[in-house]
Image (cartoon, rainbow, N blue to C red; front, side, top):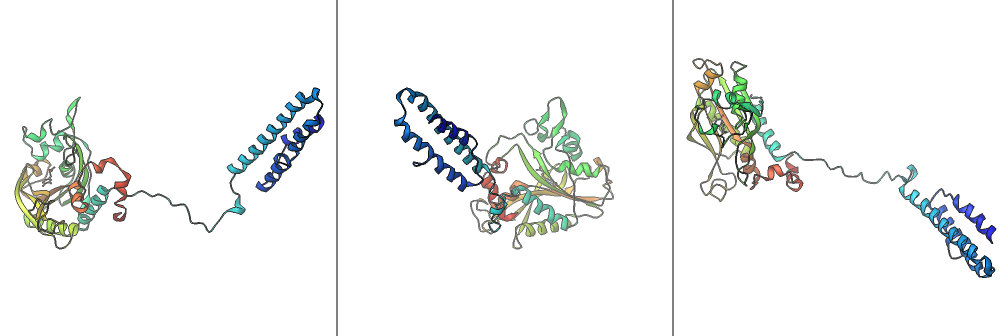
Length: 339
Ligand code: DAH
C-alpha cells in the first residue's frame, strides 16, 4: 500500500492539464468518490494495525497534495487569457469614458468665437500681475477702494505683485506693445478676496474685449453689444444700456439683456424686472490710452468686460457658483450635449 501511495504522490506532483476539460478528468481520476485516492481510503481498513499510523499520514498527505495541485492548475486557467481562438470578434467594444468640456470652457469658447467672427483676435496675460497693469495703467486713483486688501490678493513679500482682479490688465499688456488698430478678446481667470458662497468665489473668469482705432465711437460699441447678445442668447434678445462708472472708461455703461429665462415677462431670476445685467463697458478713457503709449488725440476705443460664470448661469441656470470648481462628475456630465 505504501508503494502505491508513493507512486500516486509522484504522479500528482507532476499533474498537468492543457485545458479545463483535461483538468476535470484529472480531478475525477484522483479526487472523485470513485477516484484513486478514495479507493485507497477504502482499503485502509485492511492495513495491519501497526502500520495504520504511517499509512494514514501518507494517505492524508496524498489527498492534500492532489487537491492543492488541482486548485493550482484551476487558478492558472482562470488567470489565463482566453486565447485567440476564443476571441469573440462580434462582441461590442468596451465603452471608452471620454470626458466632457467644462461648462465654463464651453461658454468661454462660444464668447470668443462670436468676437473672433467680428475680427477680434485672442490675447492673454498673466494671472500673477503687478499693480501697474491691474490698477495704475487702468486709471485707478491711488486711493481707489479696489486696491484695498479686502478685494485684492497680495504676494506678501512683494506688495506690488498681486493676483489680477480683472482681465482689464490684458488691455494694458497689449496696448503697451502694439499700436492701433487693436481688436482683442481676452478670456482668463481672475481673483478677489471674497468669502466663498453660492454667489461669490475667490476666483472666477472674465472675458475682456478692446477695440482701439481712429474714429471709434459709442455707436460701434452698441452695435457689437447687440450682435453679441443676439448671437449668445438668441435673435429675440433685447439690450439696454445704463450709465455707470469704471475708472478706465468714460462714458461707462452696464448692459442688461431681456431676461432669457422668462423672455422679459418677469420671473424670480430677473427679480421680476424682465432684465438681467451681463457686462460693463464704455469708451476707453483717454488717460488709459496715454498711460499705455497710445495717442488719445488720434485714437479712440471701446472696451467691455463680462463674467463667464454669469453668462453660464444665464444659459444653463446653475444656481450655485461653487459647482463650477467642485468638479462633481455628475454635474459636468450634464453638459455632454453642449460639447
Ligand atoms: N473690469 C470690470 C470688472 O471687473 C469689467 C469691465 C467693465 C471691463 C467695463 C471693461 C469695461 O472693459 O469697459 O468688473
